[in-house]
Length: 370
Image (cartoon, rainbow, N blue to C red; front, side, top):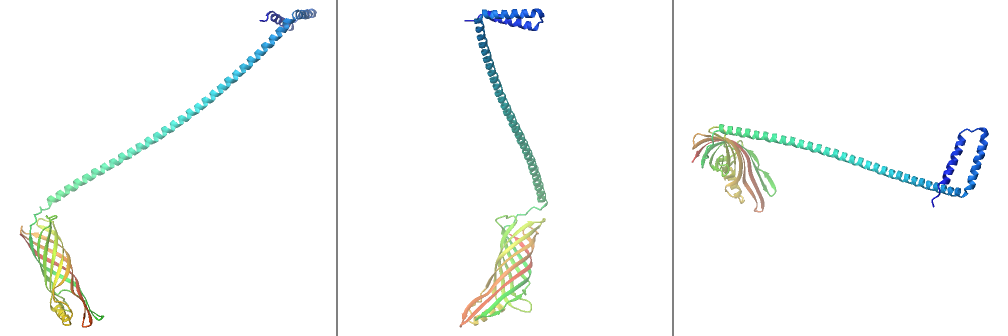
């Protein structure tokens, strides 16, 4: 049942009256009777309605409990709100930190990208400079080639036209030469060695040469190859010690390269190599006969050797079929005279002779083109 509002109103009125009495000044004489009347009224009211007072107190306690419970609920609600706000604040701070970190990462990435772009621009710039240098170098080389070609063409125009090589040329030459040679010889009989070596120079100063040449298969416009025969005649030593070897001849292969230097003039560069053939005579023939008389097996036959040489000269064309030439030459030559080792009547005999020499000279000759 719902409590009646009348006792509450009475209590409120009573409390209001008490407060007014305490606040407002009252006459001294009337104060005691008023207080007495109020107390009597209060007592009478309290006696008149004891049950209503008990009910009111219970209701007040219930109301206080409800108020305290509401206050506790409100505090819990406030605490929950504060906790929620704290969590939201923490989440906001964490989100802000994450956003700041993301911004830092984006900034770092942007800086790295900017550095890479700058590096790429620098590399592109370096490549462009390198391409420019290469292009300039290529242009310079092209200009140099053009200039060289122009100079070569100018030189070719200035040079006299090359005449076609004659299919066959026959040459005759006279050689003026000097020689420095050594005969290396020894004779050993039963271990007793006798040195028979000596140095010498040729007693002759002249020889004759016959050559036949034709264009070479390679670079035939300027190069020729051929064969030759050189006759030195009676070959012997000069000076205080006279020793005649016999008749010396040479057979060789030759090659030459001709370079036009003027209208009718060619510079010549030549090589030769071949065999030397010595027909024994004079003192050499006598030595062979002496050994034969001592029953040594030696033969009075031509002795062989080898030669190599080079030459530098020039050719002057007087007409299509006739030319003159002059050559400076140097030549190395070796001849094998004796190489015998045998036992004769119980005696061991060894005989070894050979010559080696250097020959320098000048050849003057003419050529006929067929």
